[in-house]
Amino acid sequence: MNDQPGNNQERLAANIAYVRSNIVEAAQRSGRSPGEITLVAVSKTVPVELVKIAYNLGVTNFGENRVQEALPKIAEFHPQGMHWHMIGHLQSNKAGKAAGAFDFVQSVDSLHLAQALNRYAGEQRKRLPVLLQVNVSGEESKEGMTLEDAPMLARQIAALPAIEVQGLMTIAPLAENPGEARPVFRSLRNLRERLQDELPQCSWQHLSMGMTDDYRVAIEEGATIVRIGRAIFGERIYKGASK
Image 1 (cartoon, rainbow, N blue to C red):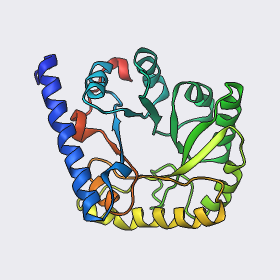
Image 2 (tube, rainbow, N blue to C red):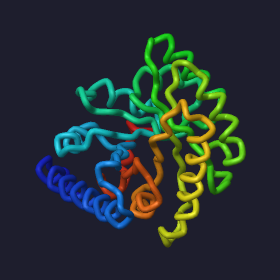
Image 3 (spheres, rainbow, N blue to C red):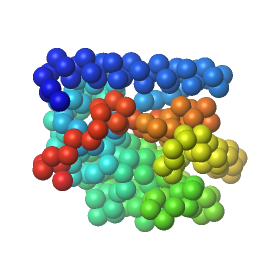
Image 4 (cartoon, one colour):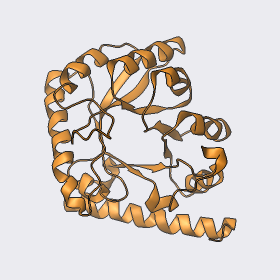
């Protein structure tokens, strides 16, 4: 692979345009405005130089899976109007660093983690936007609260003063046919509708669901945030410094 800057720019420009056109088509198919959908470019293992190129091509939201890998990128590149999202599993002992560095935490999967984030965000006098991660499919390999526990946990987390619950996030099981993810996405949307009734003090504006293989289906089922890595940056770039 040729890593010349000009080639990277052309490749990313083409990939981003392709993803955006798919977002528009999926939104229109479901009678939605494409403006309702936020593209989060998943930049885990991606060098900050490529993040800068994507930003200059109009992408303003980036997702990272690991705090330690993300911190140097965020320190180097965080222009006004750009938002860094924590989308991977977050351990409570990393909550302080995450609350300080990230603009948004999409992977709050327990009351314990939410309480830790609340404590650190409060110390920094900020209100941290979060999503509650729900393991809709029940896979043991997936993080997230269960559908059954989500309403009770949502009520407890919504009461934390330095946490702003804005919606829900899920990861669908891997499947050869993206349509197989549809029931998972629909279940998350149904849960949001229930929580909107039970906890109207929260906006519940966001459903973060859909990745490279299934984001079109997710949009048809109501996604407001899609998390796209491979379709933008290509296959993961694993380097010693990223581990």
